[in-house]
Image (cartoon, rainbow, N blue to C red):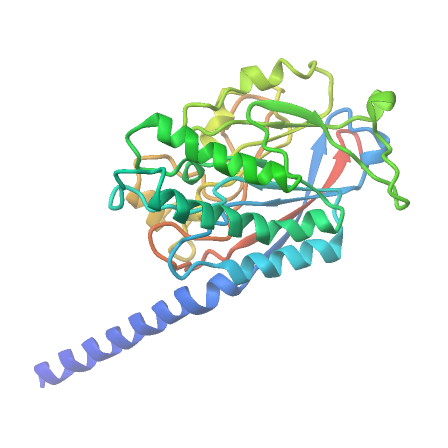
Length: 325
């Protein structure tokens, strides 16, 4: 009898595991979690009040059994909603790590890498064709990951940067730019001639590449200038001085990718890495006073194409002035 019960239990567990894999690999990654958030920006220009911006992250194009169809769905939804700007917080491509280190990154591997780069840009190009402003920062995977030669890392990242900018998507490596807000007739309402109406976007370089330098980016905006900050790795946020990043955004964590229900910090990524995983949403008790960070769960995958209790995320932010009701 005991052996019979053990066999039944084993069959039940095997069936449950199979259903979980089917759900995590085939269903949940295609269920987009559309989040609507409000964020306060000190000194926000009146013409930006109640405007919406979008945050997406971690396309990870090139991952086996990747999530390209979900990227297309998200892009189409953004075009329907027509926000003022789209921020893409890095990891446009996947690129396997240590298990696949080619000897010559300039030949066969470069061709594979560029195929991933070109596909990621092609997926985002409809946003620009629809007249929506798109801005980017680079993530760890955009540097090829796993290559011991930093020159090769930089060469791969340069290819990602070049392809994005050729498609009209500026890559902000520790750089601040005024956001362009267009009226319904396509006329810019904040231009260099109308400086008082400018809202700045500050992009932070890749932490993986040792290029996250908030102090460099911040020299380009005075203390009272309204700004939003975005980066790939949330850990870069800790270096911002108090009140310098009141509205900040990041990706990188995938929200943990596989999370135990009803728990805040237990996830596959929190167990598999030595990094502190600031999983998703508004991150409390992190960073300096007056700074606030939101982490997007991303779209793609890391290591294996499964998401459980961690749907891909599309986040819309409605901008409000600090003293708005």
